[in-house]
Amino acid sequence: MTEGATAPGAPTLAEVRTTAREVFGWERLRPGQAEAISALLDGHDVLLVLPTGAGKSAVYQLPGLELPGPTLVVSPLIALQHDQMRSLLELGDGEAAAAAVSSAVPAAERRAALEAAAAGELDFLFLSPEQLANAEVLDAVRAARPSLVAVDEAHCVSVWGHDFRPEYLRLGERIDTLDPRPRVLALTATAAPPVREDVAARLHLRDAAVIVRGFARPGIALEVVRAIDDADKRRAVVERVREEAEKGIGIVYVATRRHTTELADALADPSTGRALRAVAYHGGMRRAEREEAQRRFTEDEVDVVVATSAFGMGIDKPDVRFVVHADVPGSPDGYYQEVGRAGRDGEPAVAVLFYRPEDLGLQRYFRVGVPDRGDVLEVARALRGAHDPAGPADPPPGTSAGDATSPRGRLPRRLARLRALVTDARALLGPGARPADVADAAVELAEDRRRVDDSRLDMMRAYAETAQCRRQFLLAYLGEELAEPCGRCDTCLAGTATERVVDDTVPFPAGSQVRHAEFGDGTVMGYDAGEENGEGERVTVLFASHGYRTLSVGAVGEHGLLEPA
Image (cartoon, rainbow, N blue to C red; front, side):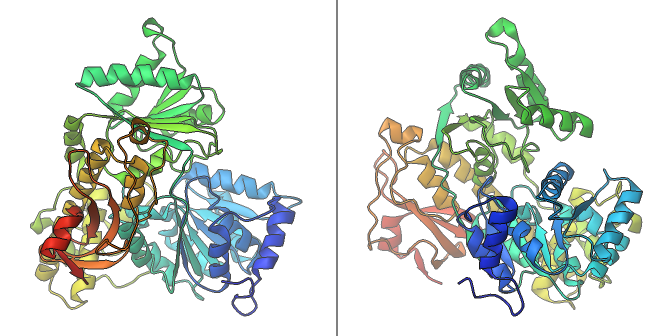
């Protein structure tokens, strides 16, 4: 869009650029920022996928200072809310008025913040999805008439994503109750195509501009280390982390809470070499312990944090020099987001995955199973009468109405997933569908999603075992083409990665819609050159009901395995 392509009466992009320079001290907008802001000013909803550290917050902060009415920022992390609020309050000479509503804020301050928003005295109001589920808070937000709603970490809304959060599920319905309905900006660092589609659908984005920029992260050298057995892998992880810690601070990701403390203790043990300042972090720790670990990391009081995937969302530390995965992650989506926490300052960084094929079994154990049809049927019956999009739906059996909305009693994750399945199934069948039919459709959806999850893990295995360029592999998975090998990953440096000749001989270009006789409709994600064993060029296709599948390009052409959808 051009700088003049804005909604009537809305600020122009030129005015926003002036604000960026005079208030924030930014001489220019980064790639993706200008496009997203232009779309918002023109009245569109926006789904913005930018790498961590690439300036996603600026895309709501700049319009938020220009548009009439407050900007509502929905974020799952209290610490991140307060960090962003403080940075806004420190701008210039009172340029921005901001407040947060969370369980960490005293009740009197929460009430004052909501009253200030309703009185038009705030530019930004930060809150969590749980707070927006509170009827009193939602009424205050309606009275404030926000012009923009920014949903941070938007991949959390997607049951297809790697970090699903049940409390995000009804954000779209609650935003729709605001009158006039504000623009909606969905922000995330990593989202493969099915996650993007799910986010747009669940947040009820309208006429949305989908902007995806900069997955490549060329400054991060990717490497995979094969281990013989678990003991061998653990020794190798300790040695490599100590080596990398000579260059700067880092993060080590592990699969289980117990492993965080075991590995942190091993790294801090002086009897086996250099003792590192290591701290453990996982979701089972008390909030004060987690906050202290994060503070020590941010303020360079530790050499390494050993953590589960609970650590990292909202972390904005530019000088992380290494990210080590001691256990294989469950999907390339989650892996690449965690890898992206390294080297945000543009300086070289390294991402190392330690891999044993046997480790895939642990991730399969963590998989969400297909629910029992009887349980789904009970939820379908309980939710049949739900009709108010602003309030909580009738709760599933075994809960009370207060359970769904009280701060200490929000729906358990399993029940929230069941409700999401039932809601999706009813949307497919129509509002008049019988609960039994809804239950059948919901179970079928769960089976589809289980196959997609299994395919993600298969793609993680393929990434770890490929001899081709690892960055090309990951980018193709995310739907982005890299024309030639990166030259920095271990396979490129070893000489096994071969350059793929980009020409017109491929049967279907990346991004095209295709159909397979067994797998159904799908999207072509990308191509790779095959392996050293003589296997020819391959195409990766994402099928809606069967997940990621890799097919021989030769077989596709010879046997007509794919046709245009």
